[in-house]
Length: 258
Ligand code: G
Ligand code: G
Ligand code: MN
Ligand code: NA
Image (cartoon, rainbow, N blue to C red; front, top):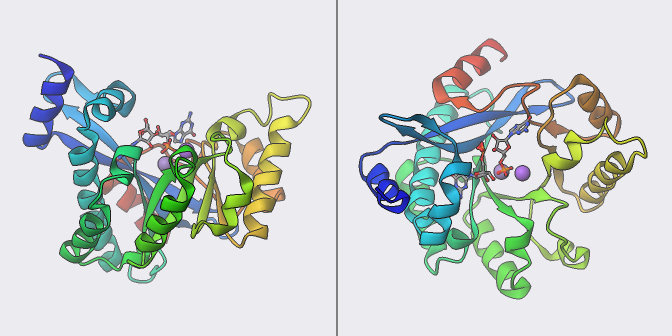
């Protein structure tokens, strides 16, 4: 079977699942949110990660219905968490949005409908968009981002630092959060000249100067965490804390670290 056909069937048969990775506050140590990451629970081959199917999903356009399913599913889960963790009203769930999804003519209507049907408080939803997607057509992008923001949700630039964006546009994007790409974080200790640390420091300062939150991705070691803390980075995610796991596991994790 061609992968494209298999993906179509997988969507029909509801074989996709979302895993969730906690985002930690480096000041309080608390879980302040999650990132939703799609997986394919294949009936014979087991759990399949996105690197094995997202390229084809993007090429064929199947990422549009698959990604829409992911947003709906994430919002249904967010609704449960918003009810369950009522003492943490600021809980934020990040969902990735790829280029094909971002440029759908009815994107706003799709997201609006999902917000309505899931009955979430939209300020707990964060759409994560990569830098390169935003730089494609800056004026159209700013307009679209403003319309998304008017739905009451949050926006982040994902993989920040890898897309060679023109920094002059950054203040005009109605973005809440910069997510430092994990390639910089992962190379903090290996790099003798301190170049990656310098990049991380610069992104943190830039985010703060523009009044945006900053999340470091891919934190794997205590050393990386200590460096990020000393640079004033407020939030982080990575294997050092927890890998992406199913909703029930991450829920138990929050219950045990209230
Ligand atoms: O765990 P990781 O292998 O989960 O994810 C790999 C890539 O897949 C990441 O770059 C991430 O942005 C992307 N991705 C994961 N889940 C989704 C999703 O639900 N929608 C979209 N568009 N991309 C996703
Ligand atoms: O959307 P984005 O490209 O940021 O997706 C995050 C990716 O990073 C996912 O594939 C996720 O599984 C992965 N990831 C999360 N934490 C870590 C980590 O600590 N180390 C590494 N190598 N990958 C991570
Ligand atoms: Mn992401
Ligand atoms: Na990233």
